[in-house]
Image (cartoon, rainbow, N blue to C red):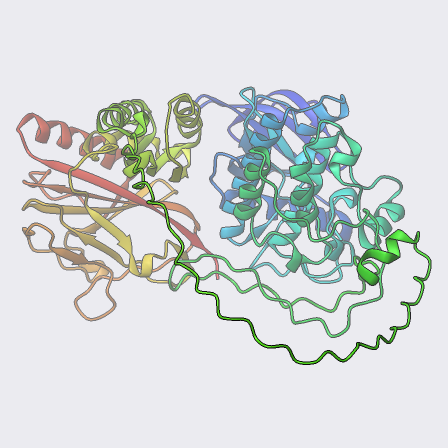
Length: 637
C-alpha cells in the first residue's frame, strides 16, 4: 500500500501505522484544506469468511463513529471503497495513543489521570446515550492531542443497539481489558465499557495492568480473583481511588457504576480526597461459600427524556463465575467484667459460693425526737451573660459586584468563540449553567480558558458538541443569539416530548414559542448531507401537494406547532441518510426576505449566503432579530 497516492478526493501524505488488518495514513482534504487520518482495510476475497467479517466490522466502525460527534471521540468524516480496499476518513489527532506513553513507563500525576478519565467517560456517556457500546476500551484506542485532550478511537467491534452482528457467544476484545461477561461470550451493555475503563484507571494509577500473563491466565484471574488495590501496588496512588477501581471492576455488571457519569463523579471525589465506602475490607483475593438465594439484579437507573427510545438493560444471565467476597465472622464474649483478658485468655475461675451471716436480734428502741431542718439558703445566681453573635460575613466571591464581573468575563469569553453559540446564567452562590452548541475545538478552548477564572460555585455543562460542518451556521447565529447572562427572552424551540433522537419513520415535529416581541418566524432543517429544508414558511409546490403558508404575524409568546400529521398539515419523517442534523429558528420584527425562496429545499451554502445578507440588512435597518438552534440525531430502526 506504500504506492497509494490518492483515495477518492484525499491526498496521501505518509503512513502513520500498520496493523494486521490494514494501514493508517496521514491524508489531506484539498477541498476544505484540512489534515485527516485515513484508515484502510483490503477488500476481502468473497470466499474468505474471516476477512469478510473484518470488512463488516470496518463498515460498522464507520457507522458507529459516524453517528458520534463529540470532543472526546475521534470524528469520522467519510467512508469509501475502491477496487481493492475500503477506507474511513477520520479526524487527525496531533498526539500519540495513550499506549505509547504507558509503554515508555511514563507516570501520570493525579491531575493528568483525572483529566484523561473525565475525557474518556464523557465520550462514553455520549456514545452510550446513543446506543453504542465500544467493547474495546484500552490505551491503544485512546488518542491524546498535543494539548492533552483524550479522544476515543476505533469503534471497530462496537455494538450498536440495532445491530445483529455481535451476539451472545461471540468473544471479541482485548483480554487484559475485557469484562468477565465479555470473556464468557455473554451479551454486553454499557457496563462492560465501565469495567474496561476501570482497568485503564488502574493502569494510570499504578503503571501496571491488574491482571498479567498469557491469555488463559488473564481470563482466569479476571473471572476468579480480585486484583491488588492500586495503593498496594504504588505508593503514589491515593487510597481514595481504591474503592472507585474496585467498584468499576466489579465481577457482576450490576455491582459496577450504573453509568459513565456516576463513574466520573466518583473519580473527581477521589481526587479531592473524599473516599467512597469499600464494600469489603478483606484482602484482595477472597473466597467464600456461594451466597444463597441472591436477590434479583436491578437494572441501572439512568435519566432519560420522556418518550425517549432508550433501550432497557438486557436481563443478566446466571453467571458461571464463583462468588467472590466474604470472610468468617467470629463472636467475642466478654465474661466476668473483663476477667477473660485479666487471666490471659484462660477459662475464668468460678465465683465464690455465697456465705451465710446470722444477725443478732435487737430490741426495739424508743424513737428519737424529730429533727426540724431549716430550708437551705440558696445564694443569688448571677445574671446570664449574653454574647452577641455577629451576622455572617458574605463570601466576597459571591457579592453582587463580583458575580456581575464574572458574568461579563464569561459573556465576553463565550462571545469571542468561533463555531459556537453559548449561553447560560450565574445562579445564587456563584454556580453557573452553560448551554448551547459548539464545535469541538472551540468547546475545548472555552473549557481551558474558563478553568482559569475564579468560579465560586459548581458548573453545569449542557453544551452540545457539533460537527465542524455546522460552524458556518453557528457563526451566523451567534450575533443574534442572547449571550451568557443576557436577560433577553429566547425563542422556544424543541421537538415533541423533548426527544431529539429520532429513528427511521419517526415524524419530525418542532414546537416553537415567539419571544417577547411581535413578529414573524422562519424555521429551517439543515441536514448533514448539505441540503436545507424550509419547514416554515413553505412555498407552493404542486408536485408535492404543498400549498404556500400564508403570511403570518405572531404575538409575543405565541406558540407554533409544525409537522402535525393530518389533512392540511405538512409532515416530515426520518429517512436515509441518517446522521446529525440541525433545526434553526429565527424571529424578527419584519420579514427577512423581500421575495419568496426558490423552493422548499435548497443547498445549504446557497441559503446561508442569502440569509447572512438578509440578516446584515435587517440589523442595519434596526430590525430586531433573535435566533436559536437544536441538534437532531436520526437513526435507523
